Each structure stands twice: as structure tokens, then as C-alpha cells.
Length: 145
Image (cartoon, rainbow, N blue to C red; front, side, top):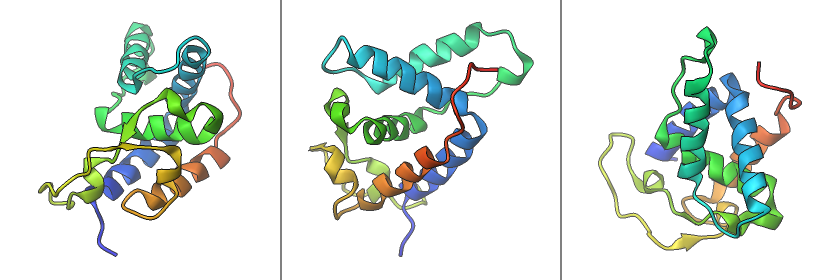
């Protein structure tokens, strides 16, 4: 199987997600709160809110940066964790799923996807299963340290 740029990004995301579970907790909490009062929202806006909150914390161990490329994975992970609210976010096929690891772009589909598309056949088929595994290994939630 040929590795795509998305596969590389997913590997990087998994490393970051594992090292910084507090980012997922904040993303999950904020998305859930907003989905109680809105029908649609932007994952990017939520991630910017999280960045702002981390910039306000004055802890030496909080010097990491949240890569923009990870937002799409956090959105999809939230959709898997909350299938009853999956339409809260609008997603499209990730361009990186059809881009070679060398960074050369291929033709990307620009139509809207559903939660089912993350598990059906196609470039995004295995993504849902791989992200769902992360939820199984999530440590219990507690306040950020």
C-alpha cells in the first residue's frame, strides 16, 4: 500500500495526541458545549480558542504548539466520539489523503463527507477505525495539570 501524506500526518497527530491529552479534553469539552446551543461550528475556531487558552497559562511545560494540520483529525475524532452530533462539523476529504508524501498535490475531492465516509471504502476508509482506537486508549479525564 502506498503511503499518503495523510498517513504521515496521522502518525504525527497520534504522537501529539498521546503526548498532550489535555488538548483533546479541551477540544471535546468545548465542542460538546457548543453543540448544545448551535447546529454547526468551526473546528478551526475551537482550536484557536484552545490555543488562546494555552497561551494564557504560565506553565513551563505548556510551551508546545498545536499544528493546524491536526485540527481535521480532532474534528473527525470528535465526530466518532459523538455520532449523534456528527453533523455539528462539516468535513471534506482531506487533500492529504490523495497527496503523495513528497508533498506533490493530487486531485482532491471537495465534496462534503459524512461520518460514514470515514468508515466506508475510499481514501478516508481506514481513518475512522484508526481514530476510534485512540478513544479506547484515552486516559480518564481530569483537570489539566
